[in-house]
Image 1 (cartoon, rainbow over the protein chains, first blue to last red):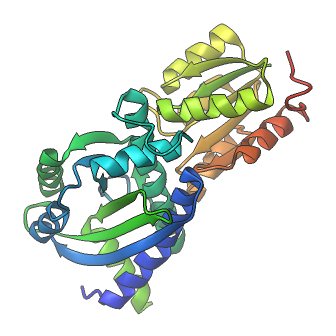
Image 2 (image 1 turned 180 degrees about the vertical axis):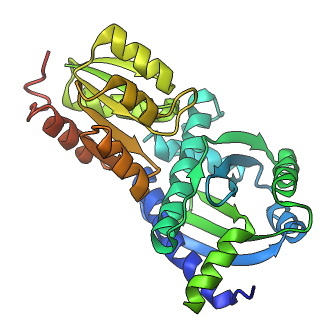
Length: 196
Length: 126
């Protein structure tokens, strides 16, 4: 199966726009897509990509189930997480000092909404089924466990499709990076639709 | 007006509660964090309307909707706005489907429509 990088990039681009709109509604200000990247890569390469996010120590994680399986990760720095919570709870910037239950709930719901916005775009464009399980907050050290989970689910040698999206608010007070990781079935579907 | 807000996200329950209270300050609001809690709360409190998430622990919002039936208006509010879910929700009797994230006015308008035009703020329903 051959998957052209530009075809994958085009699919990712359409999905990315929906997540920037979703975050904009959530925080009540314009949000810019800082970077977007789509890759078809090994789990080892994915591990390098995810763990290269230095200082991004707040991580929310969801399992993707149903037709296409995988995982969603929302990664941000501690300061960014506090600013994000301020915006979500409509509080002045700098109000939130610690992440209590409510603040953690707000971050988890952000992943739920952003991942679903991209996935809805994918399901409509590709006719696939993907459900997002309720998110959990994990530490950066536990990202390795997520990658182990993907390896157990799909096999050590498996390749995956990964969409990486970095979003930043116009005031530049908050930047988040989301990884959506899908099993190789998504690559097959995209390649087949391109050939059709 | 009695309203049940069912969502596993504490943040989302607080947000929806604020929206409802801004439009209907006298509303009696109960909360549920799982589909089963929503069913139990419906039996105990008999709300006039339910705002229901889909992806919740124990039972999903759609499973809860199936058990609760269409006697009470249910508005589904979910990030999972895939066509198959919207169709299933409607087939189970959901009055409306609101995709997260939402504008405050959308939620208020949907509640008003589901309750047959219940006026917000100055004419809250008891």
